[in-house]
Length: 289
Image (cartoon, rainbow, N blue to C red):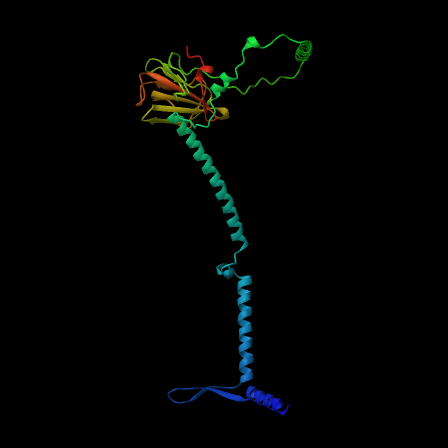
């Protein structure tokens, strides 16, 4: 017990023992500054300085923009900007995908090729076409009563009926002789109409010109986009009267018959119709005579 008390007294004496810190002039040994210190004072002063530095650093990080330079910290403004940029990037990716898909469809139309897994609508029409002779068209009693009721309602109907239709009325681009018909098996997704050189080529329906350029294979080409993803394509023209972005009306002159392009066989119009990326037979909709 006495040893422990003696040891404590020695520790206390060391902590409270006074030391003098003197700063002298090296040349004259003149005393400039002197301090009386103890180990306890040095420990307490050092601890207070460390606590003060920690507190000052915390304040700088919490209440000044310096925290943005520390990894792991970011301001609310930067977080909002990062979120907005993420949304904009996602939107740009979608727009880029749709644009690439759109350009791919345009190239597919220009090359006259389609994917193998696409359905040929003309073949489906032929496959499921009904023979009228096999259908019993004799009206039944219920049908006659319904027809009479509908006729009576229409007779005294004061409201205008909706006469719109989803079908597009197509205008013949030129009149002439069809030299080659639509043949999906040979990948000829068009009709070739022979006509004299410089014959005006007219728009088949209202729409906007989405392509009007020269191609090595098919010469002067113009493509018009109509409503509901419907496209009409005019190839081997001698000249073009419209440019990309022009709005055209049905029957408006857009080009002239020519003999341009590597694949041409004489003055004629190579005319195609595409519905949402699928070729259809123009002869089912247009009479070129």
